[in-house]
Length: 168
Image (cartoon, rainbow, N blue to C red):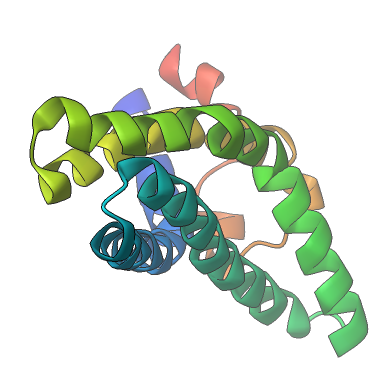
């Protein structure tokens, strides 16, 4: 198999895995930022609250999906424990860096530097997402055997590391 088709499979796998989380996190992030900015007039307060709500929306969805993917092979209690481990291993390192440094700064600077609230939040979010997904995809590929995965994700792409696929 050539690198392009394999890389395309990996990209589709990641999109299917992360898109539902991203939609939930983005809605929570932008809505909470809008409410807080409207109430306070502070981009700093909006950035902090948006960071928290983005995480809540994102990880609630990731957790529920991990439980769903694990229920077929495990009981309810074990599926929940596997989901907790999965979310912690896959997202933990990226979330620490993202929530404590990248996302609040990007969400604050975006509107301030751009001069447009919504556009600035979206640009700030995209900047933060680039760093977050860079770390997250590495964790997913490196520790995949510890994670809850959807049945189709097990067979779609090989377990080769992305670097090996890219080197072809």
